[in-house]
Length: 154
Image (cartoon, rainbow, N blue to C red; front, side, top):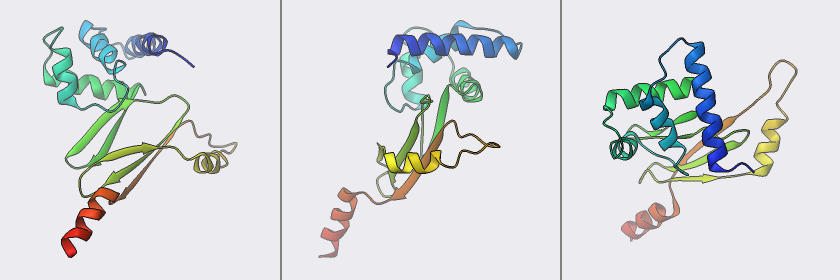
């Protein structure tokens, strides 16, 4: 299993190569943003990232949004639209499947794994299409919210 430092270094090199290929400027801001993202072990939002970055360097929200788009294009991060008010990002897991349960009542997000589902999806690989990553979002009502709803009924 790779360490966080290895993952971060690999991600930075991938970003540098991507920027060079696109004939873009390699900036300290872009590298710092990616580095901070790789310090997170969970979801993050733009505000959270902005606060962390500005502890070290003054970076505008526009730069952060533009860099997040670049990092998505480079396949280093994934954007989750859990709901219209709940947009989160995370490092793109390498070679893994990601599954999420999202409560439509309280917006709570819980990641989970399911070996049978992962195997079932892997069986969909063909000679014309090979799945490298997949994400599944399941929307419903969490146990806590269901219990609150039941109490209100009585």
